[in-house]
Image 1 (tube, rainbow, N blue to C red):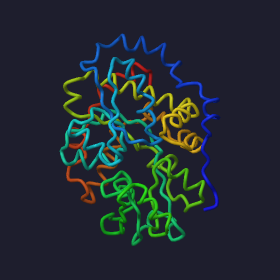
Image 2 (image 1 turned 90 degrees about the vertical axis):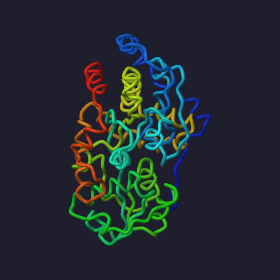
Image 3 (image 1 turned 120 degrees about the vertical axis):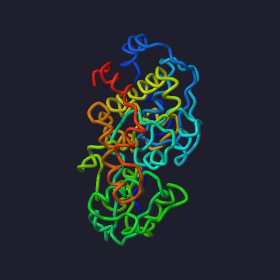
Image 4 (image 1 turned 60 degrees about the vertical axis):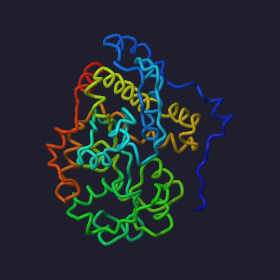
Length: 339
């Protein structure tokens, strides 16, 4: 591994930084906010699980205040505990990867999906023994942990090509996300489904080769990798607050699509990602415009059907959608924001 990943020196960053690019949305915000009632609650709690692709959740902090939330909290719950924190009411709203949410809603946990956000976070990397999805049969695949987004998504991918993920693959879980990645780097695993920014890191360090890219390869590129989820009781009790929180996140998503370099600066300044060039590459690649184009229900139905067929979830996909989705705020916002 001769290559290294560069970071933007702090004094260089400070000389380039021009602030979070909110100017373009401020003028419309006063009009949009005035059209709705005030939020029923003044505090909003989100999950703090730093990752480049969920940048909209972090740059939305100022927008959430414009929406009337005087207290905006990011709870440091890590990369495993977001769905459970939403379910048990410790957090109200969060962005999270869609596959990892499905086992929780299948188990009947009170989580409501509100909107798709973007696609393109994941890339499947293999070693010299793996050149296609079907080559994974009988091979060892590193994952973060059982039930994590990489495990569930890759199980859906394998089921789509006729494999049985529980029987055909030797899963190698790590104690941490980094440990799972290191299993592939160290040669103990034949493949790893890398989540932003790992694909950018692997390319920079010339580790493995890409078998599948969810930003480009169909059908995966047509479906959301990340969605906005909320506590079901919060959605029922506070519909105005729910809509306002979702609007802040979706407007922040538009900023990520139009101003990736400035968002990368923000991530650097706030310690979310210390490698500026890598953050720009990742933000440019992720398809943040997808929330305006795609039907999030299609994503849930597609993956739920695959997982249902191989016995990884027990709920019929149509019943799952009926139980765990509420697109009303999204539909209103698409009309208001001319999606």
